[in-house]
Length: 70
Image 1 (cartoon, rainbow, N blue to C red):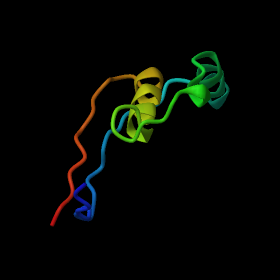
Image 2 (cartoon, rainbow, N blue to C red):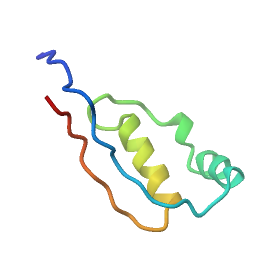
Image 3 (spheres, rainbow, N blue to C red):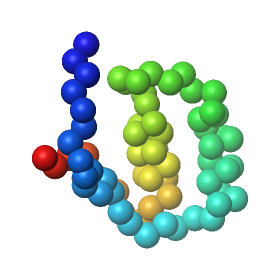
Image 4 (cartoon, rainbow, N blue to C red):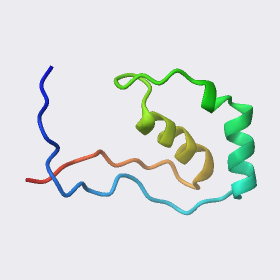
């Protein structure tokens, strides 16, 4: 396994205006059983979880890639 350090600083990932409340966030996480999902560092990790939340709670669905800078 290659342990190459991430280049920093990291570019902003995604941005948009939210369209739901914190109560709706908790209901979404509970209804979708997000906390019971199996974590896999390669195929279903924290970035995937964040994308699912982003997609549910933002007006537009625009994602930028994670890019480090040297």
